[in-house]
Image (cartoon, rainbow, N blue to C red; front, side):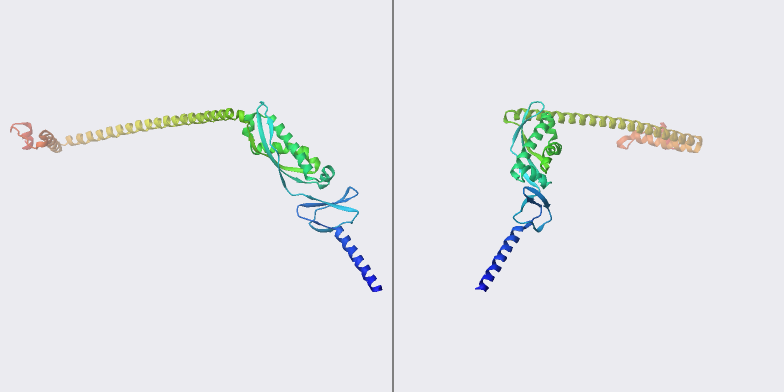
Length: 289
C-alpha cells in the first residue's frame, strides 16, 4: 500500500512538473517577436528564434509577426485641385517595427492596425491628389506619387509602432462620365507634340539640305575654277610648243605638213576619198612642194 502511495505521489509530481514546464515554454519563430506580459504590462520582448521560458500562470506570452504584410485597401473617390474626380485603388506593404507600441496602442491586433493604415493611406492619397491638377497627377503616376503618399501616411501611423514601407496606387482611373473627354484631350495633346517634333525634324532636314547645297556649289565652283586654270595652262603650254616648233625652219615645215594632213583628213570625212587639183595648196603639201 505504501509503495502504491509513493508511486502515486511521484506520478502527481511528474505530471505537475510537466504541466508547469509546458506552461512556461514558448517558441519564437523567424520574423516574430514574443512579448512577456505580467498583469497587463510588458516585462520583456524576445526576438531571438528558438525555445524560451517564462514564469507560468503569472506571465503570458503574446507573439507578433514582424515581417512584411500586404494589405489591399478598398477603392476610394478623390478630387484633384482642378475639381476633377478620380478613383484610387491602393495597396500597402507594412510591418511592425516596435512591438511594445504596437501592443500598447492597438493590443497587437492586426485588424485594428489595418483600420488605422487604411485611414492614414486614404488621407494621404486624398491630400496628395487634392494638391495637384489632373494632368499633373497623370504625369506623376509611378514612383513620384507613391513616394509622396507613403511619406505622408507614415507620419500618422508611426505612433502605433508600425511602418508603411510602400503605399502605392495600383490603379488610378477616371469616372465613366468623363473618361472619353480626358482621353480625347490626351490624344490631342500627343498629336500636337508629335506635330511639333515633325516640324522640328523638317526644319533640321531643310537646314542640312541647304548646307549641303551650299557646300556642293562651293565645290563645283572651285572645280570649275581649277579646270579652267588647268585648261589655260595646257593651252599656254600648247602655244609654247608651237612657238618653239615654228622658231626652227625645219620643224616648222614638218608641223605645217602634219597640220596639212590633219586638215585633209577632216576634209575627206568618212569616204576617205578626196580629188584635188594638182595646182591646189593641198596637192603641193602632199608633193612636199
